[in-house]
Length: 253
Image (cartoon, rainbow, N blue to C red):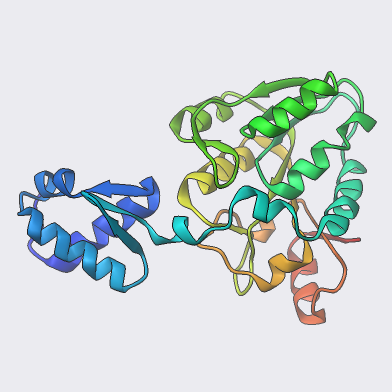
């Protein structure tokens, strides 16, 4: 690949970094037929923009380093998550085929699935799969690369498996949506998983505690109009509540 302008090269590197999470200097130098020093300057430029974090032989996306661990995301707002989960269970019927992502609020919903019978669940979250197996719920785990920050399996294998499934409902979490037109997540690989689940489900249920209305995240994975129900905790600003009510079924608990 050749490009005449440094800005075009840097835009390509930025997109590749956000999609893959990490990049290597040697691979980029060969791809663009430029020197390693040129690529290092590009990565320094992206680091100064807050996009990349340089490391030995390459860089990782800065957002990955700043993202809280799965345990850090699981601990806050437990009471809210339990109330949200009970509301989600009301939308789930016996015998349904479900898709569930790796969100911490989604995991709280999984804890209550024992209230329903004859379910089949497809998930990219190993922790959720282990829990549901204890409940003797028929569970299928989607393959892929393990991402510890979110306890999720990601990548092409996961997306390919999801595209072979037709679910009655998808239960999906969000990292935040402040100032956005739909729910968001911190990274591209998980956004692709969520998009695939939405496209292959008859009903889409997004769950998120009250902090998500005050939090932004990197990638918007859906418009609110494509979400059948958004379940959250009471206390949303009135203006935001009115806006969401026009676009989706808003369930406040």
